[in-house]
Amino acid sequence: MTKTDLDKFRNVLETKQSELSGSLRNRDEIVIEKAPDALDEVQLAGERELAIRNLDRDSNMLRQIRRALGRIADGSYGVCLHCDEDISPKRIAAVPWAAYCIKCQEQVDRHEIEVDDNADLFASAA
View 1: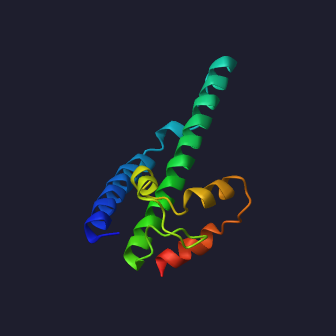
View 2: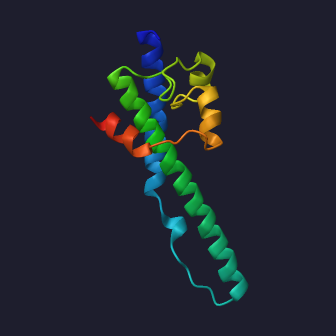
């Protein structure tokens, strides 16, 4: 991968990181509210649950983006963390924070490969 490609992906990742960091600061939607009507309370609880799921999804994506930026910094960006093969340019273009090639990602999704998220996190921090 060329330096120009790396710079382009770094910019994409940093932009997405800033966007997610800003949205994660707003937690007004998960405030527990009481309503006089039981149905209103059920609706508020459902909305709060959805907001919590969205925060969790965004938080996980932010972690993946930070790890990808760490891989750019240490020179391992674009290489599958499992099989050490290059991740296809099409996959990187579609999912710049991808840590696995398509084949390995499918195995991760089927839980055929055990992923140690903490090891990747600590490796990126070092």
